[in-house]
Length: 281
Ligand SMILES: Nc1ncnc2c1ncn2[C@@H]1O[C@H](COP(=O)(O)OP(=O)(O)OP(=O)(O)O)[C@@H](O)[C@H]1O
Ligand SMILES: Cc1ncc(COP(=O)(O)O)c(N)n1
Image (cartoon, rainbow, N blue to C red; front, side, top):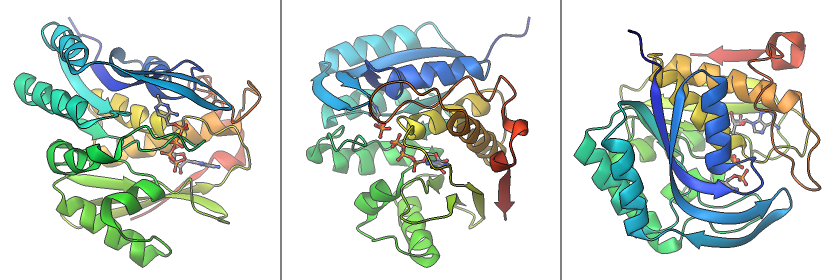
């Protein structure tokens, strides 16, 4: 009997439902994989910002990881908001204990509104303990800069930062371009350890409804990996998924609204010229 691919997200809860665990589970569902979740922190959050963060105790994280690991056969997993080094240590221990593979690390550091989703003391643990286990790490531009100390202002500095991130032990990296200033395109730059690179490019959609784009993108990659797709194809599908999610806004909330997780499966991708994704190898 063919089983539905099973996935896990280790991340924070967003009460507003657009980012974090909620974005991940919606994306998993839309892409036809079964999603489990380990909650690292509860955030009181909506489209206007984060008003409070309640981290889980390391033991609460450990118990959730144990419950998932002792029952499910995970084909891929992602990490999002991990908040502190103790929680990172629990995630790393479980990955080793259960032999989980296909690990996508979204190195979430800050919410769009500026709230700290990773404490400064945890950056070192993220770099030295978690990144070496990653099949793919998915920083946005500020995160890639924080991980490397390199200011990204050009294609050359972006490549240099990607090389430095691979030097931390990840097998591949994609530096997402959502944060590029004054850019006509949203470009995601992929580099893997054999030196192969791919640039995924789409027209930048002019919208303020971008809450949770990074979580959704990484969850889509994870879902596709769980279904057996190769990494470069999984990233292509994720780029399509987020483009459709941005181009069909829901107009929800008073601030930076969530993306439309249902748009891709509803077949909205092919409906607009703006949804075309270009790939440069
Ligand atoms: N305005 C936009 N138009 C088209 N694509 C976008 C836009 N903004 C972001 N993206 C795409 O969304 C994905 C996530 O990129 P982004 O750089 O926004 O990540 P992020 O900053 O981690 O997200 P978040 O702010 O949710 O943490 C990438 O594929 C990126 O190209
Ligand atoms: C729980 C949680 N995880 C991740 C994000 C990042 O998403 P964004 O940068 O779009 O706010 C978030 N806001 N909340």
